Image (cartoon, rainbow, N blue to C red; front, side, top):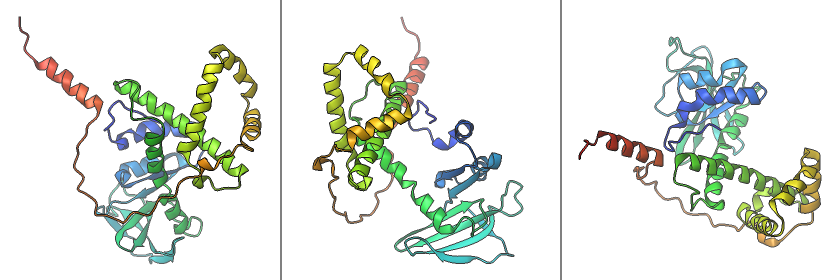
Length: 292
């Protein structure tokens, strides 16, 4: 995680800072996955450094020069939609920053095509259907953000400063991970897919039990209790013991009816970040003439 006090800062500018941290923590080779905002030669080069690879969604207005010596190939994705693979260069072939890539185009009925660019050229080793499925999984990030804001009390902030907001968000990500672990154990015990269980309802019950614990046990008792479960093996055993028999139908996620597609409204910017408001206020205060 790389955070900045300006909540409206574009994440692309922080890739150079974040990738060395990821590489120090995650053994390679790694595959960097990015949306259209990351579609430029500089970011692709960053993803592909140190033996890593990249898979980036190409902007529709970004150019691609096909390799005239290699014929395109057609195929199907997991939803039986037509996909086309072509090899060539993003931008122009003679661009010194150019990199030989494979472009995968997925045609979608009633929607704009999806263009993916990757430096993995071998279609047999890395099938287009797999890379398309991986790219589609990015939508899980958006769902995670939605759950974090809806489930973990973001209607109220612990403080109004940008650093406090960053801390609150990071803490909520930890809570999200914990609830996903609880949901996985409950789902496995009930032989039920995790997607059918409500994170919100599970968190509500976990929150009630933690509230009861804080009332009945002192902080010193809690600190003394925790070391007994500090190893991964003990944590797993304890979770099985607690959650294998825990069940209520209230945890089943309510089914929501499919909503009809509506035309997307124009993207009109109507918000800003606290950081920018404070910066503008300080600048105005510094320019005010001295009086008195």
